[in-house]
Image 1 (cartoon, rainbow, N blue to C red):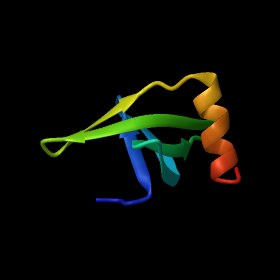
Image 2: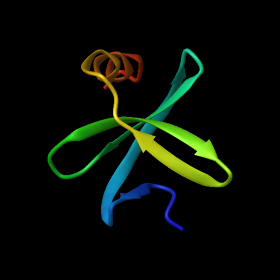
Image 3: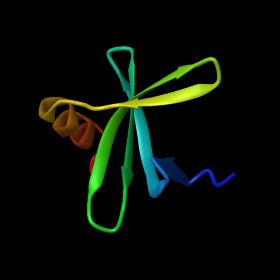
Amino acid sequence: MDLFNITINNKKFTYIDSITINNKNYVAYMDDDNVYISEYVMENGDITFLDVTDAIYDRVLKELNL
């Protein structure tokens, strides 16, 4: 297990950081071209990544100083 990689739909991304805002968990990760932000939910040992709004994307970037 590589703690610095996130795999979504068989594509690997590099983990940057994570944060909790208003009791929701967000993760920042990147590929060669972009930085991505997703909300994540952990349930029964599974992690589900959810899309975020542009406002949440901007807020997470600001909170993480990215």
